[in-house]
Length: 243
Ligand SMILES: *[C@@H]1O[C@H](CO)[C@@H](O)[C@H](O)[C@H]1NC(C)=O
Ligand SMILES: *[C@@H]1O[C@H](CO)[C@@H](O)[C@H](O)[C@H]1NC(C)=O
Ligand SMILES: *[C@@H]1O[C@H](CO)[C@@H](O)[C@H](O)[C@H]1NC(C)=O
Ligand SMILES: *[C@@H]1O[C@H](CO)[C@@H](O)[C@H](O)[C@H]1NC(C)=O
Image (cartoon, rainbow, N blue to C red; front, side, top):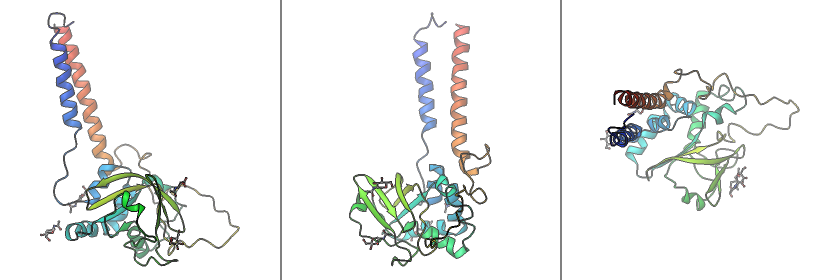
């Protein structure tokens, strides 16, 4: 049991630790900033990515990032946020309204977390007119906490997904519904139960393994690491028997 060569054991450990950390590091982003790639890497944004693609706003954001020095801020609702919408919410929108919904999540300038503290409400979004009743988006801050209100929903910035002084991507816990598209219903007695929107919103956490191309990268990495560890254990066991 490695008695003859006790010095081999720590060497083996160091070797496998080295391999594990090497493979665990993600490759640095190369080329122009790509909002889709950033969201894919972060995981749990498959619905937003789908919308960014179908509305062609992903390309537009990437082009703007390359051509402007104002920068861009994106509020990114998670898959969970989309699945908490009332059933059929997305399907009820026209293509043009879907564009507006996504544009409402994009600010035409870079804002760091601390800049939210001094931003003046309502903020303009790429959806346009921030007059009351249209596309106003307000932020309120307290310490490190940033909340967003639209007049329809109140959301919280949960996390900074990406920031490079040109592009900031913040995870939000709710889909930011603009007043223009979701005027609060006049008091109506019809109590529609809030059901998760199963029809048009896939939930990444419940998707069968391999069904989501967007999570295959992370799954691949985990698989790789598991394989690596298994391999390491096997080699150590074989060496111990042999010695
Ligand atoms: C951005 O990244 C996505 C996903 O990785 C890829 O499909 C797309 O081709 C990239 N776009 C550009 C302009 O590189
Ligand atoms: C970025 O901008 C430069 C200069 O304006 C242009 O040559 C290049 O093709 C652009 N790249 C992309 C991916 O749009
Ligand atoms: C943000 O929202 C949370 C939950 O709704 C609330 O508890 C908190 O006080 C709000 N903070 C600010 C700064 O508005
Ligand atoms: C947003 O802020 C403006 C200016 O303080 C205020 O007039 C407006 O009522 C606010 N709207 C919402 C939805 O909070």
